[in-house]
Image (cartoon, rainbow, N blue to C red; front, side, top):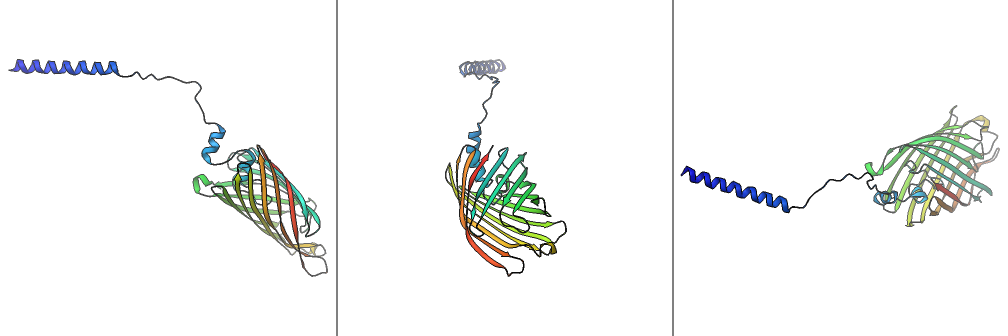
Length: 284
C-alpha cells in the first residue's frame, strides 16, 4: 500500500515538472535593455500638459505684459520686457510706461520700471526692486506674491518705499489679477495708495483681449510741495488687446482717464479725457 502511494506521488510530481517546463518554453521572452538616450517630454508637450502657452503668449497669460497690472507669478521665461507710449488728452501730454523683469529661480523676480506722466513731485518716475511668489496656482489654487520697490522718481526728489501684494487666478482661457500698493517716503510726509485690476481672455493662441485699470491716490503734508502742482488722484482704465508671435507681442490700450489736480493758489479741479497707449513686449 505504501509502495503504491509513493509511486502515485512520484508520477504526479513528474507531471507537474514537465508541465512547468513546457509552459516556460512556450512563454515569450522578456529582455531588459538599457537605453542611453531616454525620451524626454519636449517644451511644447510640457506646455500642453500645464495648459499654458509659451513665449510672449505665456507672459500675456501670466499678466506680465499688461499696461499697469503686475502678474503674481514670477516670469517663466528668463526675462519679460514691455514698453508702451501714447497720448492722454486729460492733460494733453504724452504718457509712457516701460518695465523689465528678470526671473531668478521660480520664486524671485528683479524689476525695473519707468513711467512718464503727470505725478506729484515729478513727471518722470523710476522704480527698482524685486518681488517673490509664495502661492502657486497649480498647488494652492491661486497665485500670490509680494514685492518691495523704491520709487526714485527722477532722482532729484525724495523717493518712496513701496510695498505690494499681488494675487491672480486662471479660469480656463480667462485670467484675473489684482495688485495693492502702498508707498511712503523716509520722512513719512509723502504717501500713496494704488490699486490695479487686470483681466485677459485668450481668443486664439495668438490673440488676447482684456481689461486693465489703475487707480492711485497721493497724500502729502510736505511743506516743500505747498507751492507745487499736486495730483491728488488719478484713474486710467480701458480694454486691452495683444497679438503675439513667438517671443514678441504687440500691445494696445484705449480708455477713459481721470485726473484730479490742485495748482498752487487754486482749488482742485477734475480733468477727464482719453488715454491711448500702444507698444510691444517680449519674453525670452
